[in-house]
Image 1: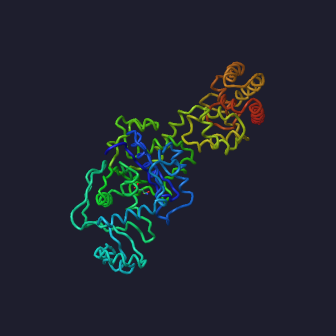
Image 2: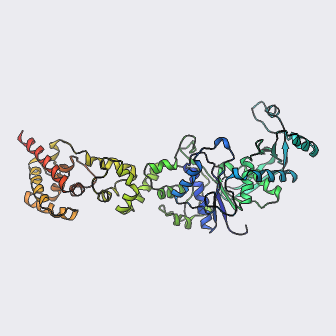
Length: 484
Ligand code: GLU
């Protein structure tokens, strides 16, 4: 290859971006950036039946959220545009006509009925090159009469076509096993079989990176490059990502949609890191890598031949690792919408809560459930103050609560440090251990036996007024229980 590496991601706008598509995109990006090359986004929208409104925006949005920046594309421009296939329509037809002249393709006028009659007893059908024998004159006459046509690829009947894939090695297909596929449809739109070649060539793509479903049709595409006398690109085909041992991840079943994961509270950088490792492993076996590190370590030798299984639990673990690295302020900034949809919306200091949550959630969507309890303070079983392990009982708890009310009232300013000092005093005055004070405080101000963080953290988050209100409630609850 002469010159700079150029790779592309060529999604079809079908309204969905699943993890498999995104991984293809990521690898094409990583490879280009590792080689200091150019990464291109091309929209393959020639199949109008599958086109979904808004799908192109979804593609832009997904790339942006994932931190994958294309150097050329419909939205950012470039010297090889247009980057949307439907805007390149005329060009394909021109090239197809040229290919006809070069003998690599031919016009076909066969009717639907004739094509159907070629079906064998097993339901298989292979075009019999019928129209290849039409004379040029006859073709011209039928074209000038406005007869409907398609243009088919002319595949040699003998021999083999082969190439070396950078992941799967030598791939060879017998020519007799390939069909003279349609390159230009009767609506004059190209099929994928043709457009991918014309686009990759005219966009100067040096390395074609895509799913392995194209592995065995690539020899056919190479024949088109050869017929034009063009240099073939290099190929990197990727094994599929499986849902389980038997089923591929599929957009048809709504599996593993990138935006759904974002909605569930995954950090995009964690998703990207996880999918980078689905089918590729770095030499140093490090798991947590930033985009920059992925670029540095990426190499085609690390791409596996075998399918990988998408394991959401593992991705969740990785997300938790990314969350642990956030500062409380970053945590709040990135998860604010989850706080805002919880019962504590607008109350309490989110940053203080974030300090407790950082090590306790692996997904932002877990925040809601973990903070709602703060607003769910209600009567609880006073027997819970009896704790054998901590040698605590209702009498001691009552003493602790009374002392807590006094000490907390005295506090000028309310923070964890001040509360810790108060706990020392409470323990002394109530003749209790600090552990017993923490335990009692937690139950008294939340009505819960377990919370993220202990009594001091809970009081700190609730604030002075609310803590005192709840201590008073708990004191009365205990006094009543002890009366009976
Ligand atoms: N539009 C094709 C797809 O989404 C792209 C295949 C390729 O990368 O060549 O599967």
